[in-house]
Length: 207
Image: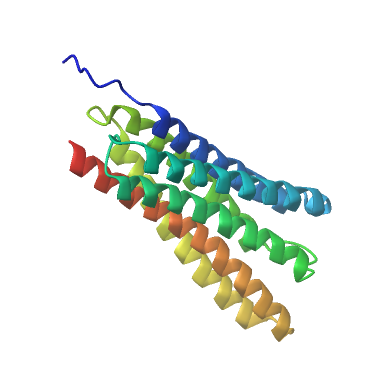
């Protein structure tokens, strides 16, 4: 049907830009685990991605203030952008703590969780891209189910990692430091699940 109201794709552009930052941050986190000798450079790159992500959120909120008609509810757009920003914030916080706490080497569990996070973030990127044509979201539900499955895997991994840490550690302070990094990494995966829930709510409202 022809519409006299021009279609504004700006919000979709911003959401996809934010999703791209989420993926790049997760990729950098995986790289941090694999190339820990380059930790300083990689952590700085994550820091820059966090700044860029903040700018995209700011631009989105500014556009929301100036736009009369939005593709879907303003609150949903705002929440979706915040959740994606939360993922990057948790990755940034985790990476910084590895340097601040002088972690000598990533644990096997951290490396495993970083891979789970990256897979979830890539699925988030695919799901966000499908919102451009909200009336035809073929395959979207499958993506959301896969994100939720990864959240469950991340949760199980985190419980196992913390249990192993407490069972085997001989350095209580190190255990406390690692647990905080474990928990923040797991929260980044949780935020991907929150994004999936927000996307599902948007689709239900608009189809």
